[in-house]
Image (tube, rainbow, N blue to C red; front, side):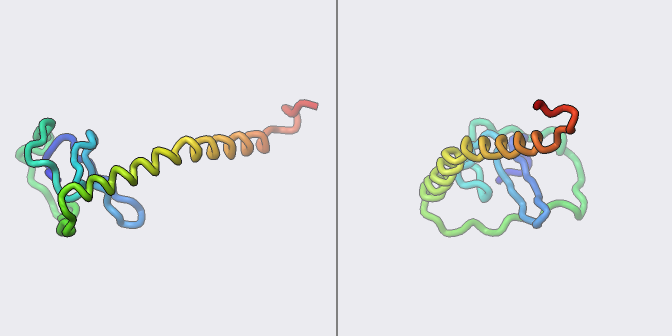
Length: 112
């Protein structure tokens, strides 16, 4: 990934895992590389001329040997699975929150 692109983002989780991605979803081989001829590549101006210290994230591990196109197809199928389950998960969480709200009502606010 071109970390100097303004569309690049990374998140570090409590487990130490780092997610690196293009916010425009234009990098089919993320997190290893961006397309060489990406039409939306634009250098991040905030980083221009800055000296980086030792707290910068370590470099990425090498890209695995995956034939062209298969990585994008695998990631697309995983995204389809997440998108299919998403509405069900949202409704379950909303139902749990509504149930918790009902339990937290004060006795004087309960209807008889």
